[in-house]
Length: 526
Image (tube, rainbow, N blue to C red; front, side):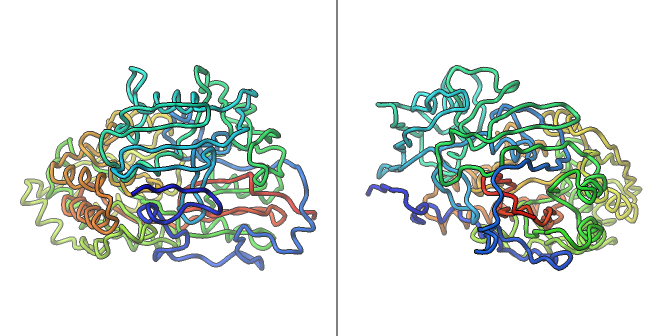
């Protein structure tokens, strides 16, 4: 059997059922829009179409500094959300989690599932004016897969055995073994071959060009007038991301007219804005959790981790920190990923102080212990969550101390080197379940939980090569059960996402991953 997909309106679901996410699915509560404005779905009405304003600059608040402008070296979600407008891959994520064509025109998968042949669109050029060819795809994927003799830059490409380029617009990728997650990996950015200054002056083939990055101030993009996809040609001339770590300052700046858009505004901030603004709300497909370093005492004892879970009341956190706008979780999977989500785990550790104390006593910590919760200071949501949890842990004798650090320090100390005891963070949604649960594999380079379990590793490896969607989903559900049973972390919630904008800024689309598609946005005449 061969699958040959010619792109018309999107991918067939033959192989993509495994990665489709319903954008508005799940059980997350969606807060009502603020003021008199209906939630913006991203689609302009017929009246609005006649008022579209060509050009203009949109100013967007962003809470964090970019960690690296090179798409292969960046790990921060906010950075990827900004730079996604600069880079394009063979595919991109659609509004419903489906894959839609970007640089690729068609693809074919061999009967044994080991060979992927991609036909590239012609006329695609990078921002430096050079033509994008199969050689650039080879260069990009060789870096990602480590075929260039260097360390692989992405575990998603670890199964790539070889990349061939028989002509300028054909790429043939051979895998070492069947990999059900591979197709979704092809949203990775394609970069120009032999260009080694992506961290200073990034060059891609996306709808916007990089202009400048001023640390502590802003990151600026401008319209790519040579963008290959004329239907997606940006109407905006310029996007300015203003670095504003303080959430309240962002709201005040929007009210003052100094910025046009606040992604991730809190429910309280949305209420503060009042009428005259558009608020778009929806589930994030995010997992907010308190990660526990499974390699340090006393967190290396499963009974201690289970006791911590029993001491935490997620419903209280959702009500106090998220104003009730969140879905409680029990493992590292949001119900937005319907096919793979294991129901019922959110109730596994119902709050029980006495049971938590009993487990601590069994583990030899009847008098409790000291715990440091490291939190990135620029995410007030996580700081507030840590404060609530520290109070809850007192009930079982655990003396928690909050340690707030800069985002760059969090990435280095916690994410890269696992130098911490506990931390509060949000793990953003992905298009494929392997990208979500594969973070806990023993061999995963950024497994900062230091969780190591051979049974879990076996389930994930088997799921990766399982092409039957139903069987694959069952394996991932078993993996979720294990994460919960082992209390690897305190899985808290999938918080709803609120985006606030000026009324005349239109075209925003909500995705099941954090994505800001400024090519689709525009101003209307006021």
